[in-house]
Image (cartoon, rainbow, N blue to C red; front, top):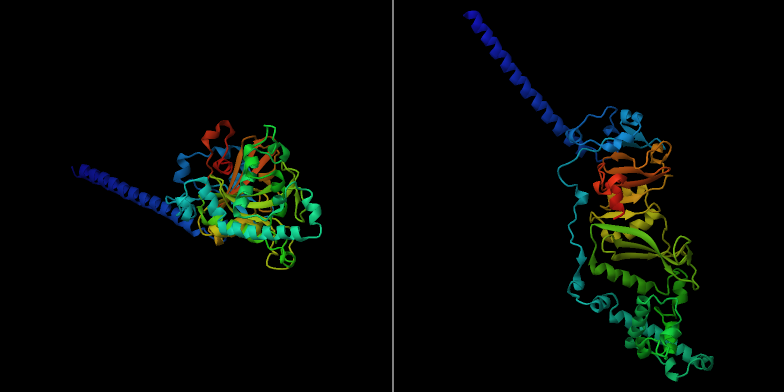
Length: 451
């Protein structure tokens, strides 16, 4: 009996020890999860970036249930070492994703509601919106400048030669606000009809084929005369201002317009910075030739716009190198982008841009000092990119390489054989593949960029 009681006691003791060991294991596992969470918050600095790299990454609870198919095409040597090394050998890009936090990252939280603001909230018609951008006091100033030019033409010594070009004397008379609005209305009308390259004789034809709107508004001679005399600044002081500003002829009008478009609209969570070419073949010291654009010749304008509604909120005309003065600013991509995003600083918006603008110093500057994230394409010559990301040798089509840092993600996608696309983002922090892209297996970063 005593032997049986001893065995029972031993059995009970063993079972009790197993329970204690089981509790100790669960406590250790809980501690590891908490430690993993703490390490995420500690790795926000660049110094901790290299410490995040592990030669033998420990699987977390997330990737136990989520198998990353993008790793199937990654060379085995990189998986073993756990990171990619940049071309200059100074930057390590981790293969493992950063620990996923339950809370939304602060840089992805937007506190502003997009849409019309201030007086624009009460605007009901297109005309009411237009008046907000071009108020009467601004147009009255244009009328004053234009009137002055008209008077100069009437008083100059070749006034007789000019008047001979017009059938009626009233074609040379001064203008007013109503006529200026009528002139702008005709320009909008021609734009709607895509008539930029049509002969104005066709619009003022009196054989029944012309436009009644044009004929009823003003004569063709008056239309051309007003366009010739239209001015947006004081010509008496232009030469002095032009010594330090190539945009002196339109500087005040253009700056005021940009201020008003920012005043009446709140941008959404994603904006785009890009360039546009306004077609122009006239005389201009900063006219650009861009063979990849439809018009090829024109004025280059840098634009910041809402990615969803396409509303333009910031513009800067490229005037090349300015003379010494307040308008002598740097045209480098980093300095240009910083000027463009000044109005949305610390708003936690995401800025999308192409590879002409994107660089690692830029995305770091916007993330740390401007409170903005960046999603952009990259050129292959950046020293921070690992060589394997740009190489097409042995690369499988539709394959993706991801490189991670605590606050930055680098991506290399091969859409077809012999070609790779490089993107970098401070908004994305995982290797998610968009299921809606089917057998193309495009990452979310690419679908968001093409949005």
